[in-house]
Image 1 (cartoon, rainbow, N blue to C red):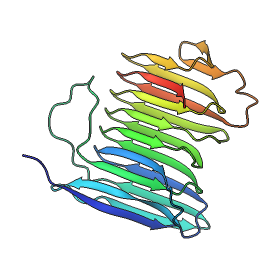
Image 2 (image 1 turned 90 degrees about the vertical axis):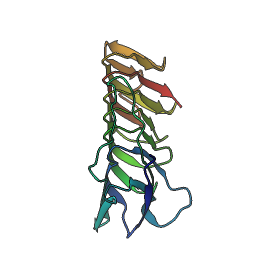
Image 3 (image 1 turned 90 degrees about the horizontal axis):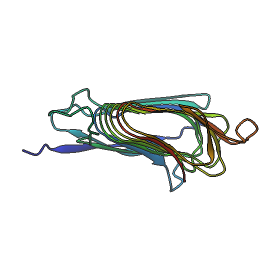
Length: 222
């Protein structure tokens, strides 16, 4: 029997925020985060699905002196059924969230087992932590950044990081059963470390820590 899916609509006003700390916990569902495309004066908007036997998602926001703190959290109910440890999991629900690209954001994104995709192109981000218990994880980085730190990990799926050509990177990549795949412009320093030749003097650069328990880890150009 199919489960009924309901949707909560998120819309939080900007309220003068110029920086933000954003924490998203999508439960065991899929999570997609991107930037607002229409210039609305909001901090975040989106659609948050939940199942009929779950409580609706909850969120809170506080803005003090231009610094916003936004937390979104799904009900703690877990998916039913057996998931083998080497299988990436597709969540039963989908969260689609759009963030204000002009707000410099410290972003934490979590799913207990769904797929996670962060399209940060055109956004201002200062730190990114993304993880999922068993799904695939994809992060598309912006064209401009200063000393960005990115941590991305999954228990069983693939990790894909897309780095713009004009951005230098230092990459620490590990996988249990899969392969590490990097763009040829990243020089291999040791078994787990790769780096752009111009990294130390680059204006736009990112430090990446990426890990998968069973899938591939790919850091490629976009």
